[in-house]
Image 1 (cartoon, rainbow, N blue to C red):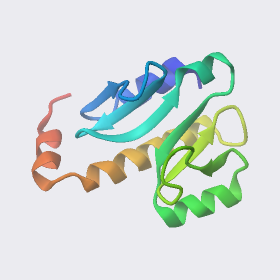
Image 2: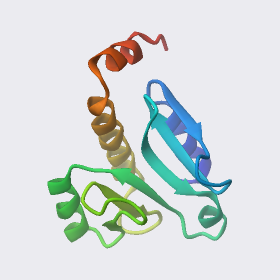
Image 3: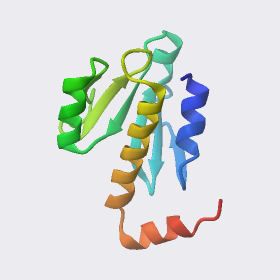
Length: 123
C-alpha cells in the first residue's frame, strides 16, 4: 500500500474528512469530528510509514502479540490505539480491516443524532 491508496481508502469511508490539526506533517482522518487514523507524511517519504488506529483494547493486545509491526499507539493512549508499520508482517488487507475497525469504533462513539446524520449522507 502506498500513501495514495491509504488516502483513498480512508476517504472512501462515509463522511470522512482530512485534517492537519497538529502540524503540516501529521495527516488525520476524522468521522464526526473525531480521529480514527493518523499518519506522518514525512515518514512515508522516508520509507518508514506507519498509521495510528483506534482498536478495541482486548483485540489490540492480541494484535500486538501476533504481529511484529503492531505496537502500542505512538503518542496516543496505549490502551486504545495501535501503531501499525507498513511493509512488514501485516498485509494491506489486514491494514484495511484495521482501518475499518477503527472507523467503526469511532462512529459508534458518536451521538445517535450524529450517527443518523452520517448514515443519511448520499454516496
